[in-house]
Image 1: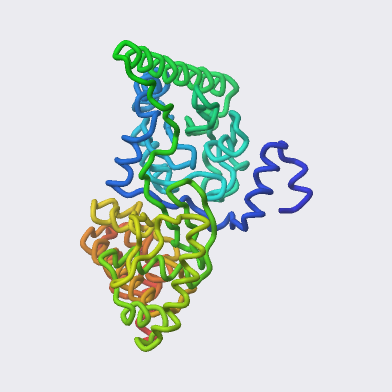
Image 2: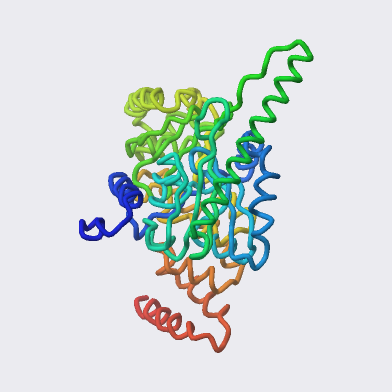
Length: 413
């Protein structure tokens, strides 16, 4: 970031931008990854302590964020993953374009400066206005967020965010969200005191305090648009992986029933005879997982993961299956490990692209078809461009651009 620009920023924003730059995020291309799919999202919601406090949040914030309010209210966990997004339905549909949806991760390490992520990073309420956002696609928005703390331990367990246009960054909005969070924390404390009293009357021991991390929550792997994967274990520890280890985990997650050593060697190295090389790499992978997600330690005969693991690629496939094609296209980005030339990753990319492409052709939506046509996988796809031309209304000004591009593609052939 240019130092002259840095000095014009508020200190809290400047510090956040510097963290994003140290994480090597690209403001032109970074976007929120989808890390929780349908079942995973529901499990995370049920397990999170803030689920019990939703009525308080809805009463104090969401009730005023109904149609025409121009406000969206989001509740996320301590990792910045959005669990609930409610409010103005028109604004929510607009927010889908930047993946401000349940299941998406909005921590600073994912999207750079934003109210939910920065509030979690600094442990305090914050307002981020328009251009202060790090990611270019988020700059039309403003937001206010406050972290929620466990009433017993003081640990951050989640975040409450209000997103919309300029008015949501007004000073009174921060006071409103802070008051809401205070009410939520009181509600959690009262519920625990009530539970403790009930246990005492029953002659039992007090239940252990709940935290924002649910036991049994699966590990998560992010590989979309990344040349190396980012893994978060069930314990909450996170870390980057080498290219080869990212490939192995991606393939084992995709082929969850397991793979023989010969087949896995073929998918990674292109040679079924490279079993000795594969076994040595699996030993190194198990060692790397021991620092982040030991529960995943691969099992053999066949090779498979030792515990469930969710991936952002799986979330895209789940969106496509549910008909949420716009969100699926937006989150696909550069695809899984775009720099990998492992045969198995190329197969995986082709399979997922084929599913998305087929769904888009069936949808006959000009906006979706053109959105895919602008990606590296769609720019030379004559069938996609022809379908977009057919779907566009006769008077659409975009027809000229589509015709010109089709002419160039057909001339190339």
